[in-house]
Image (tube, rainbow, N blue to C red; front, side):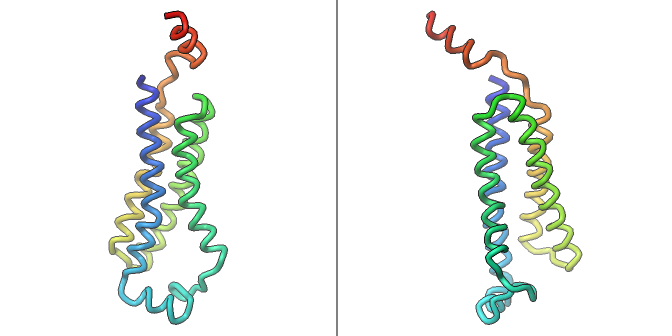
Length: 148
């Protein structure tokens, strides 16, 4: 039961990251002048909006959603390892994004969101590393259920 509870915690954190990415983007878009610049020039902070950028954004939403599902379905060892590795990778990307915003002197809602997302992304590998081992395998559980 402890394992399931921890898996649900990790899964919810992945969902938080999936929702946080478009939320952070929305906070950036509503900053004064950003939407106007995008509509007039097709750029954001001087960079042209490309297909690659939209694919990157999609990946930052899809990966957490896939991980939320896999957290609940993968066997113990694969679950633990994938959450530690993918969680650290996401934390690194979020951390770099946070540093970029802070270096540009930005301290608005999007920085609060990306800082929170970085902390959540760091919490995932920590929780996964401390994931309790399963008390019984599914096969053992089903055998017991069928004999009662």
